[in-house]
Structure formats: C-alpha cells, structure tokens
Image (cartoon, rainbow over the protein chains, first blue to last red):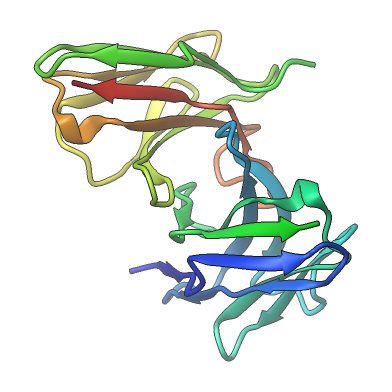
Length: 114
Length: 115
C-alpha cells in the first residue's frame, strides 16, 4: 500500500530564511509521481511542484525545489527566501502511474514570521 | 479561463439528510476526482470519473455516490449523513486519465457541516 509520512506538524520560520519540509513515502510501484501542494486558509489545493520516479534531476519551480532521494524514499520540499505569503498548510502527495488516486500526507503547517 | 468551480461553498445539514455537491472542471478537462478532507488531515480519495465512467473508488461506504455528466461536470451525493461526514470536499480535474505531470487542478472545496 502507498503511504506518505510528514513528521513535522508545524514549523515557524523567519521571513527570508530557507525552509525544508520533510516527506517520506512508501510504495511498491516502480513508476510513480510525487507532488507538493500548498493549502491556504481558503481551502484550495495549489500545485507547487512535481517529481517523477524516473526523473534523475531534482525538480525546481521558482523558489521551490524538491530534494528527491529515491533510495531513502524521501521527497523533501525546499522553499528558498521564504515570504509571509508562504504561511499555509503544505501537503506531500504521491500517485502511481497505474491510476489517478492521489495519496496525501497529513500536512505541515508553516508559519513565516516577520 | 475559469478554474475548477465547486458549489455550494458552505453547507449545513442535519444527521440523516442527503446532500449533493457539484463540480465544474476546467474547460477541456474530462476527468474529475473527489476528495474528502477532515479537519487536521490530508485529503482522502473518494471517486474518479473519466468520460462519464467511474475509474476509481476509495474506501468509502455506499452512502457516497457520484456521477459525471456529458459536459464533464460532476455531482457527489452523500446519503444518510453522519456527524463524521463533516469535512471539506474537494474536486480536482485533469485533462485525461493517468495524468502525471502535476496536471491536477483543485477547486476551493465545499465545506460541509453535519449537525
């Protein structure tokens, strides 16, 4: 069975600092994708970044990068130069190539301090 | 272009009642998925529909049902509501089945409260 583990329920970070949100996953599938989503208080899930299991390079999208360590089954999100608007819930998620079911972790609440 | 639209945004129902939630996908998207997000948890997969056919179902009781219409919009129906059904219900759309490259766009959700 697929499983996502996020061990940090909450984090406080000073504005402009970099922050790493931890994510480990478990799957027996060989082909899968890993996602990070941001959920502000409005409730909408905002897609941030994607990493395929066969991608050799770590994914980057602007200030977001995904530190993918396949052997350790780790997919940490790194946010550089954090901003006040980054305060939100962050979810790590995965799906196998064989279906469209996205499995989410329990999330990490990030607070950016001015 | 409009994103994924869900209605209503908020809803209060009494135990035992029935509720219908609606979702309009992004124009051109043919796949719609439904997720339930209980407070303090990550979303859990309920259903996926593609081309009006059910393509996946999560571990939810038969009180939950859904359908997709010819215009690719979708309804989620929950019968005999329980207090535990109180949650944010999210709809996600994608171009097709098996989309990989982050092509899932979520709506803002319907917040259902059962009293």
